[in-house]
Length: 168
Image (cartoon, rainbow, N blue to C red; front, top):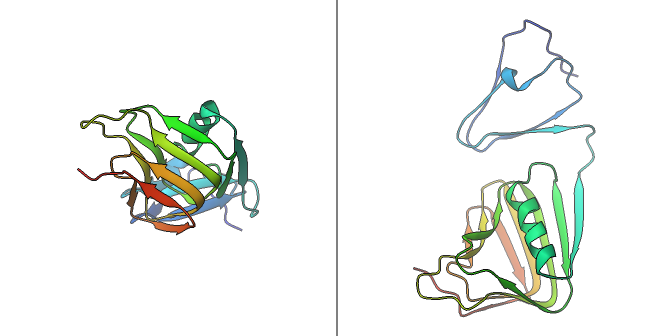
């Protein structure tokens, strides 16, 4: 158990992509933690992993998932199952999934995610990972993106296809 008391000015320093889970620490506030170089502090109620499950049935679910992934510091695991169909990403929408922390599991079930009518200047990317993230892609086709996957974390791809993606 760790406790900070009012007036305690001894900070915790986080650096180099460090991740700290703060669980039930009385008196500890954001002012007690100094972060730089992408240090991340996660406030949790228990030691249990937080898991978000989502079934993607249509494009609106795909963009709901994008919002959850791109701002994730709430979930240790994001588990996604796609209905077997095609999902069109909007051209020039930048990065569909910008994943910073945790485990992202994409169960494609034969689905295809593609950029609708991309032009030569389209910069839409499918996935960008950071050092403290792991992504598992299974049975999914990723098509027509500029830089389908930019990986700084860990990406595992099983039984999937990358079609007509390009790197500028």
